Amino acid sequence: MVKRRRDRRREQFNKERRNWLIIRVVAAAIVVVILLGIAWWGFRQWEQYQVSSDVTTYFSLDEYSIDHREGELLYEQIPPVGGPHNNAWQNCGFYGEPIYNYHGVHSLEHGAVWLTFDPELPQEDIDRLEELANQSYVLVSPYPGLEHPVVGSVWGKQIEFDSADDDRIEPFVRAYRTNPDNTPEPGAICFGQVDYTVDEGYTLQTEPSIISGSAEEVAAAEAAAEATPDTDSSTPASDDGEG
Image (cartoon, rainbow, N blue to C red; front, side):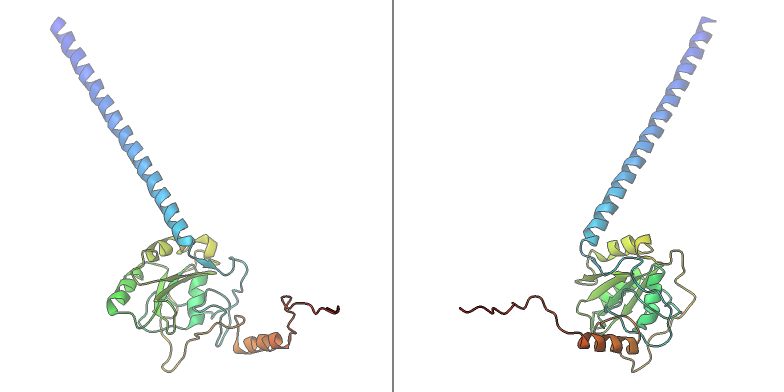
């Protein structure tokens, strides 16, 4: 009887010890997961800050036209970062030839990141950019006349990259792809529309225009600007007094 009670107590003790060890292991695992989550969140915040400091903001989410227009359109920024655009968006993905700006801008409205690159880049650099287009809401296409090897654009914002392997490219994509702060139409898709490139002989806009709009609207704005008297306050006032 005494031995049986000792065996039961020992068995109970071992069972409690196993349970306690399991609890400790589970608790430790939970703590590790929480710490890893905090570390990852902190890294992503730091990463986004590092990238955001190099991003140029041209306008906020609600400060620019999202009108749908037909016909050719010109833009204030090159490559464009927003404004009136065609009713059809460009399917996200990789393109080996330039695309029409007015389709690309519509993709930006849906939250896409548009990476444009110098067509003269080495093929290995182009291949590296093409890999980035394997994820949703990423649009990659060549753009003749760029001043930088690669330019990243989202609605209202833009960043220039020094090369195709610039270590800011992927953080930029992660930070701004479908980001509510630069997506006028959150939840809108980036597939199912046009996937063609520009016609042979078509010339992409390489110089920014005074406003974003049709050629007629741009011409009218330029004429109005030329007709406006120059009121440069930096011109020193004439001294009427005698010296």
